[in-house]
Image 1: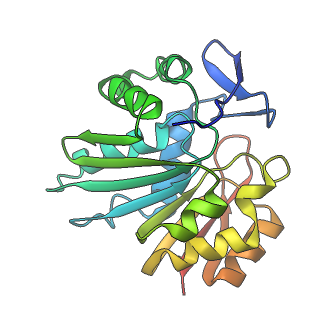
Image 2: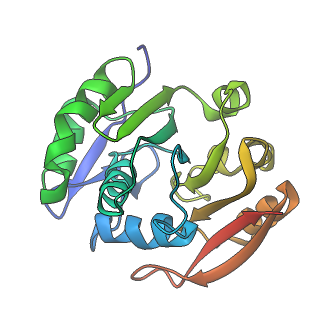
Image 3: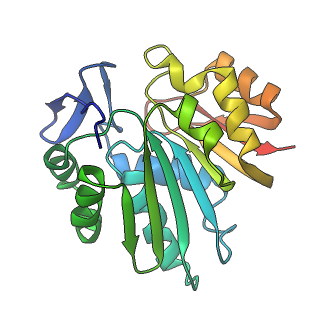
Length: 222
């Protein structure tokens, strides 16, 4: 696929930390529970699930967000397929991804498919799930995307360290690729992020965050 691989160090055994952004890929406390609070609860999921529901995200990382979404979809009893599109400029290697997910027992059924996708064409097809990793700079790939999402997971590294994924123009592209009444959620409560989302057309609310993060941000397209 020709994308540069993300170099990582390891903390607490199997938590990957980006060497480039000096930021962990997920909470040192419990990455899966963080995902469920920030991105699922933040987007009012699974309550909003319906046939053909489409989640999109900025920053695929380890795939934990996709896994949590697929598990919630299956548990909700929905029929049909959950669609999940993720934009990722610096993918992990398959080996590092496997190591990062090894600490989550619930991730086991997904690891092989995700590792194959991240080393290949980015497509993840499993029962009840149609996933796609779009490789490359989201500032170029998202505006060219033909899809529109019901819910967005904004999961880039911290805005101070990875400002490219929080630029106002990119967040406007997020809004442009959101269905009417669609939502977004992010662990970040940075004022600049909230302002950019508001300018893009989202009605933004700051709510309590996960663990040591005091606040997070949710939005609904006005």
